[in-house]
Image (cartoon, rainbow, N blue to C red; front, top):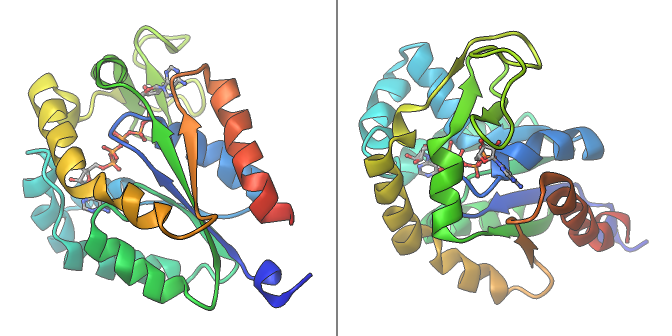
Length: 223
Ligand code: AP5
């Protein structure tokens, strides 16, 4: 094993809103024994606790816009500092600026792999408009595709299920537009770094998507 292979792994889950990043981040975190860091979840926690950061972020999130880079990176790197053994990033980086900052952070210290979840827009809209999120554990389910056993109650922790403000049709369209403009260029950015970017077909059933995720990681994790 050379020195690069013993470095802690950083896995980036990338893809448009509703592509399944959050769905697979939890099981992947258990599988790899690495913490799952979702910048969206961190912002939502800050909004619930009414911190100054949460109040600033809410204005952008409710409109389907990205939160400014400096707010994202300060919050992210504070959290990442606790994760010496590697981590899974869900929904970050989302701009070229964030990607370059992450590169500087991991360079020389970590192995980086980016999994890009691919899915058509019409499927995204179906997934997001029916998504229910748990106020307790944050897990998601879906009104039609994966309904909870009891209406309004999370199967995992019995917490209350709710629909995210930004999962309304008009905001979903705005998020998709922002994704195309600001996040899609990252595919080319990471595509230029050999062996870093892996494509995942996210339109399959969940268990098939997850096995593709494990296969994509296999080479990098166990080599
Ligand atoms: P964030 O919370 O990260 O939202 P997002 O990226 O838009 O992603 P989602 O959480 O909506 O989707 P997902 O891919 O996790 O899909 P999920 O697995 O839930 O960010 C929210 C906001 O915060 C942003 O808009 C921005 O304002 C701000 N923000 C966050 N990070 C930022 C950053 N780095 N920079 C700037 N701003 C930032 O799946 C969706 C649904 O589909 C679920 O109901 C699920 O059950 C279902 N589903 C999943 N997989 C399948 C399948 N295979 N088959 C059928 N159904 C499925």
